[in-house]
Image (cartoon, rainbow, N blue to C red; front, side):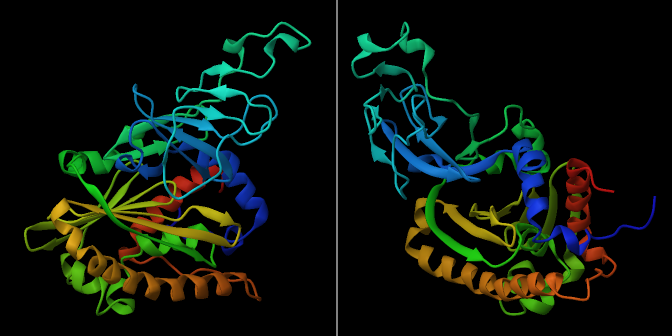
Length: 337
């Protein structure tokens, strides 16, 4: 085998690559959709998962995930929104087909007049895989995703019990970034740049580079740095996900789902104990400071990758081994040399 190398510039921002990722890469994994506390029993929420309109419901048996389209003529049953809403039934605004929160058809307008025999049981909502883990709802768009326990392999090994600590949502950040998701994901795995690009923000949190400890799992990877009370753990996971865990129990879920070949969305959830609520605004402001520093870097990198003459990335550094680890996984799933 040759020396480790970065992905070629041509895979960043290319429409054909983005389409292949939609088929070969994204369906293999689970995607955090929502903190479970944001979907109380008896409520429903419409949102988008990688371009698919989906519908979360919470019947008495536990949360469910469906495609947000009526099986009759594909019209959305609910409009997408930021918050879940109380909902006893789902009624299609087109022809009035009515579903319960389990996705079962309860009634269709003028059922006796269909041109062939009509059975309600033949027309449930189209279900998608959904799991609850670490206080989050995880959805998948593929019929056979990797087991979630494998996707979280290193997280469960290092911090399994801590991951399941009860938490509530303290706040969110959401921004659109003018870069391929891979550039944003690479950057968040990049431990080489922290002391240089974030001297007064993230570097203060993570401490001296000489104390960095790395661990690589089959799917996830980890940077651990000592701080008062224990280790600050930064996990990188496929497809474009990061979990940041503080010794005091604060958890940040950070992801970069694609919006277009050369754009992605930065989405951050800050979770912790109720006692942190009065400080939530200050904590989010601290996070936003270093994320704004990163925004300038990743958008500049996207411009540089796309400029002529064609760019050839330099050699990986020891502190970039988490990037190399993830990119090897990406190459395998995307069948790249």
